[in-house]
Length: 318
Ligand code: UDP
Ligand code: MG
Image 1 (cartoon, protein in one colour):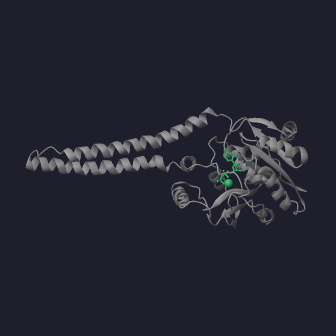
Image 2 (spheres, protein in one colour):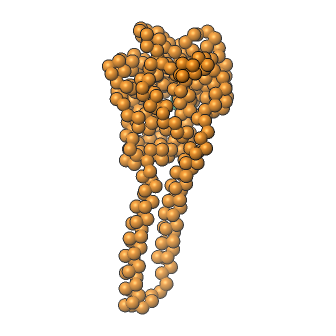
Image 3 (spheres, protein in one colour):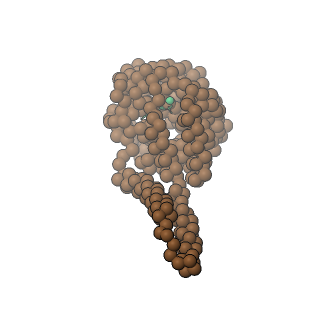
């Protein structure tokens, strides 16, 4: 019987745990021929998420949990889940039921058809603010233009992957993880399953506008050095324009003599160049920051508690 692990990152989801488990196990209970196991990852929640998980695990054999020492972010939680999963197939889904469990049978069918991955694609952004959707569309356009990974509009983290693909994803061991890009970068055949956006049942989103912007920047800088190169491009254009301007000014001075001092031109040039230089230093800084974080090689997550049998996992891995 094939084993399927369902990884669920949870951060302050005390209201959702039981409901999520109930709804999802109802669906997977109807799929025969597979052995499902839940791996909940408590990402350093401040509410009763951990207690809820312990409680649930006490009652249900198919519930495993991993608990972090603090909040490391959803990316780290997904990584930890993948890292500790041993299933033939692995499903990643959110705890807030925004990823409809009803898609799971289709996903399983997809990988059985021979796809390496079967992922959900949101076709509408119902319930999301207009500005947020606009920025999101802008991000996809920018990202696909500047990086060598093509992100699919509306692709979410909800997906099933084969063991082979999971191992490939784990082999990208970067600290600053941008999973949307990583999933695309590792390649393999992905089947997309469209679905309508579902609004959160309880609790609230953990994303602020600021964190989304940070996420977008890390997405582009993790997979492209185009912004770095843009500094060369900008520098080249400005040098060329300046050169032409210098020649023209020299000729003008030789023919007409020295004119009234050009206060406005000087000011414009200084401000414009200052801006460009700041921008370039900023871009450079962004990459240096990435190198800094990577070079320290800190762990992606720190595990505090789990009911997974880690000793057994280690012997199996050897
Ligand atoms: N999440 C997490 N760590 C965090 C933030 C979120 O594990 O630091 C989990 C959260 O519990 C949920 C999933 O990631 O299961 C998606 O989070 P959220 O619903 O806030 O994001 P959205 O659906 O708005 O993109
Ligand atoms: Mg959500």
